Length: 274
Image (tube, rainbow, N blue to C red):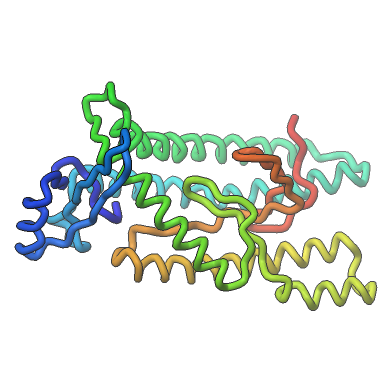
């Protein structure tokens, strides 16, 4: 959506691109290597004007808004699910019997959460197929320049963000096609580390404090990153979200990692899979 990547907005001839620029159109240049040849194309940007948006960005924006509405329903359910799961796990650990009413409430919340979550994920997959099919040579909407324009823009912006956070002292443990897994600078944990050394905090209390600090720091960093992306892309469509803190976590390889997730509240005792 940020770069207005849509078939009818593409220009393939450099002369036509020059004419478009001379007519005061802002162009996004796409360049990549394919079969040992450099491929170039240009896309007319929308300059944040509704009438200049292409078909794909317009449809994707509508789908994105629908997904945001579903995720808004998910947010309170997710908090409740995590809270109830924590209560149940703690009770089991202490050997206490779980009231049937609590189990029923938790099951109901989980069902509602999974229902709305499946809907928003379906929309996410559907949105991704626009550019996925653009890269499928057997698809009727195949357009290599559009598919590669999407991946090159994504890689460029992810590298921008990686450089931005690295300069602020954050470590990068792992990077994917559209995400970064970061570690905070040690300075943020100095006070709680000192409290642990003085034995003012237990090990679990220390971990809890570390996760809380990380949540707060990452939310602030997210806002800084998105402000930076608005400046660099000249649009508000390009954003990165903060999702969760994984601690402890293990990175075993590409797309192979696992850990205890903490979203809105710290939860070292998640309800085990049944």
